[in-house]
Image (cartoon, rainbow, N blue to C red; front, side, top):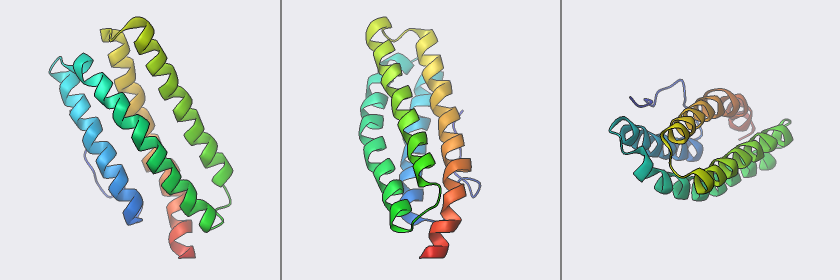
Length: 134
């Protein structure tokens, strides 16, 4: 069962929302693979996508925050860095343990939890500020 895009996730910033939709699409593909018992096979592709995605997406958000002098941008940047540390740890564990069912399940839960917190709470908090500033 995937996560459906809706207004509860929209920031109203086209560039950010488009990136979030792509993340959601890729995460849903991974969740579907997990439901079909193929999460192990899809895990490497998910890591590769996330490695590229976080660089592009976080850079986009941080650029918008800096351009608009967002008052909480340092904390938001640290939130991004925290996710990168989590991602690095998950990849390290994958290399050490392999794609065990427990690790795939944990990664699945971590990614869904982070996605919902990141978009629905953290990003929606800065979006009105960015839209007001221009």
